[in-house]
Amino acid sequence: MGAGPTAVYALDALQRQGLPYRVTLLEAGGQPGQGIPFNAQHNGAHLLANIAGFELPSVGETLNAWAMRQTPQRQATLGLAGMAHDERAFFPRMALGAYYADQLAQAMAPDAGPCIVSLHCHAEVHDIVARPDGVRVLWTQSDAPGAERHAADFDAVIVASGYGKPDVGERLAGATARDSKGRQVAVLGSSLSAIDAAVELAVRHGQFHEAADGTLQYAMERPFSVTFLSRHGLLPEADFWVPEQAPPLRHCTPLALASAVRGEEGDLDRAFALFARELAQADPAYAAAMALDTADADSFADRHFARRMAADPFAHARANLAQARASHAQARPSPWRHAILRMHEAFATIVPALAPGDLARFVRGLRRVFVDNYAAVPHLSVERLLALHDAGVLTVQRIASGQSVTRAPDAGGKAGCWAIAGAGSTGHFDDVIDARGQAPLGLEDFPFPTLRLHLCAQALAQDRDWHEGLAPAQGHVLDPEDPALARIHVLSLPFLLHRHPFIQGLTESAAMARACVAALGRRARAASPSSGSAREDIHAALDWLDRTEPIYLGRDVLMVARGERDEQAPPTT
Image 1 (cartoon, rainbow, N blue to C red):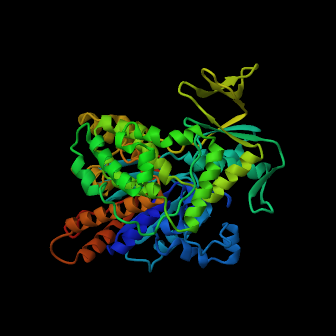
Image 2 (cartoon, one colour):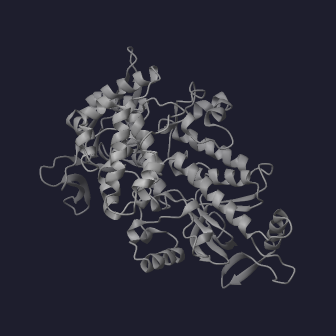
Image 3 (cartoon, helix red, strand yellow):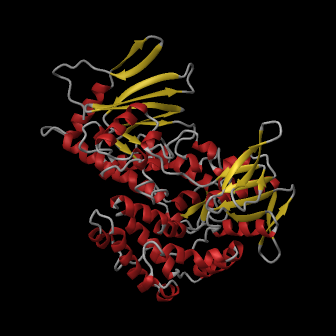
């Protein structure tokens, strides 16, 4: 389910695994391979991704190799002119979407591997029914006459629907800004998504240009203003240089962290001691400035952000951009930043096992530091923010605890302007754009009713909170002990975020997809009959499942796999 980047990585791994699967891709949209955040419908060439070419896990070829073999005309259309060869360049989002679309087409080719692949676009999945003998999927082909309804049985299902809810594309900050009619616009958040919204508004109301001294400037043609509304009033920092091969951690290793976690409250304190030891050795000057020897898991984040919060956000952004450029020019990382970047990957291995109290403390404190550090943005994005601020267009306003953004009715009772409500609040806006990113979703939001009931019943029996979403087992299997749920792999990010707060990037999408396919391979091999060729048995099963006939149920036609269960029919695998 889904045919975005995660599904592309999964299909590539299936083809490389060498088993002759029959793979069906069900894509709700009409642009397979691209994914919602990277498709051309919601992005222009001015909206940048925040992952460099050398960081992006390759599919059939690397991102830069693909970019360099595109025609000059296509490079220009995708915003790649002059940077296709640069492995540290940040490409436009739509260029990444085009890359994944091309890799999907290659992975579906008849000579790509042993898998037989079919793709259904505009296929809206309504339900998933998990049974011990297989999984039934029901969907509507919305672009067919009468919106044909289908049902089919599968041995396994990978839910790779990305953002979980079908309308998320319409809520992306850049796409929302494109439709904004207001002149005074507030943007909730200040991350790269907020920058997308500001840049989208800027190119509609004026243009960026390079001044004689080489600085980026903005010329406004139609008056408008943008205000970032942020709880902490911070702007993201600029991308700093990191080596392609990072040195190993010495103290805060996954093994050491695993030894510190005992499944009880207080595990976070033992993990933080390893974090502090690693950070102090990596950058003694930073450790002294933070008084790291007296910090704990609850106070460290406030110390880390204190100086930045006390400064003017644009003054800090200007100074930080200069530091980041020097880092790249000298090919030298910032020691404390690089240490924190490497440690977030180690911490990701233990966060799912933290006790509830420790998890809440982690989210309030250390998680903020990790996310801010790895969410560094392209230098051009920071330049654009500074240009908009210098032109009098962009400001940042901190929203205090107890304040909120509400919409008041006008004199006629219709929806009026937006305002900040609460003590000491100021500011009125014609429009508000939510750029806070994807929030974790719980089981109550899972969009497939039968499977949702199955999961909620299981959570109730295990005394688990529905709001916590999902915590799949190895290979992202819902439950390896349940014969039905063992057939379903969930890679849909919103439902995993509660226990896996660092899985929002393409690197994690690739890792999840490959782990899922490895689990499928283990299951397929374990299910293969002990005698005869496994490959022949699977081919025979697929040939048997090929015999289909329509079943008429009232006015609806369901196409289901069906066969006569005689002694000659092999078991499905």
